[in-house]
Length: 269
Image (tube, rainbow, N blue to C red; front, top):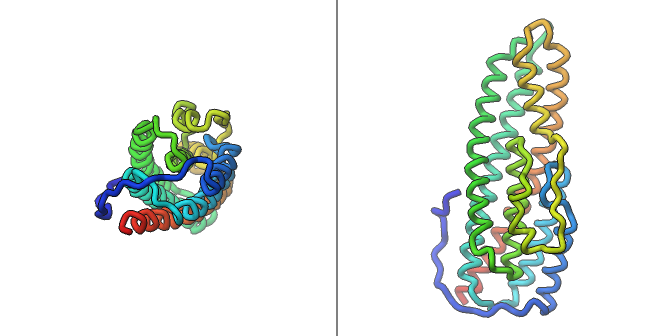
């Protein structure tokens, strides 16, 4: 998640309004709506819901910034490029995974009758999964460092940033086939003391597909017909989940871009 595309700007000291201003209260209300959802979740439908909530949140951020001459926006600007980097990485991972799933589905559909030797295709898919998982784990490690940085700052924009990181972490954890640990949400728990952080134990679509594919790879040729049908169903469900997440992340990305443009405009006034 490199920040090599960071835009140069002139640091300027400006002053944010109090948390009791109408726009701040509106932003707080939108944050509360996200707090009421299951942020630390392994469900693709819940994660998609949270992404939609982030889209709405950044629309409120746009209104909030439109009248601001705030202070320390240089720090907020640093956070905006960091969030764009995280979002870009998440988009890339989603795109790679969707392509791998589609390629494997195409290979399975091309097989006919007893010609179900999918060893090469399965190995290619699992190799791709390992590469993507390596990227995800590196990204998740970076996210934890970002969450711990400046954790004493509880301004409304800091809460927006922290919540955004949590939702992206849930997307990446979902794609890795692993559940997010309770400790991953410590910063959000601090910023949102009235919210009980959820930790779901259900098996998500990525885990189900991985388990089915590993089973398929371990079976002999004449015993895999039923497993192949099951894998096809699971891959279809996984593709749909990835597509929903991809659309949600794209919407958030557009919101992040608008926010960064607004911040730059304020600083350049």
